[in-house]
Length: 103
Image (cartoon, rainbow, N blue to C red; front, side, top):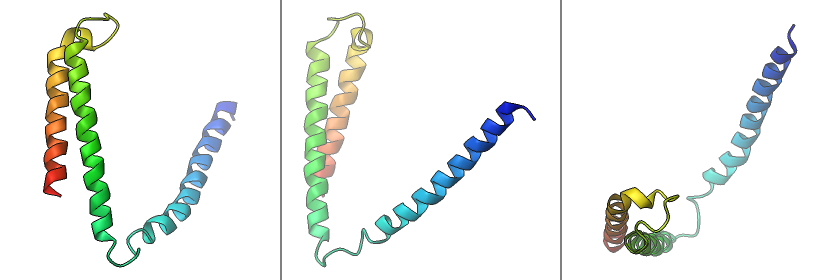
């Protein structure tokens, strides 16, 4: 048998073992994630709201940076597509802000 065949068999076995091990570890974690303290739904919604505000702010700042640093460095992708990238960042900022307000 070719030595590469053994390597392929060992690779498949290691992936299977890692999959079986991680399944047992993650099953316990996700099984107990929803059974927290009663009344924890408002806390989770508040965390989602805060993270949506943070994402909105980061996307807005990224959009401003895409506008202010246009065509400064030819190695950046922003050198040629700065208009589209700033529009995408501003749209993502608006979507995150609307989702934060609607929560």
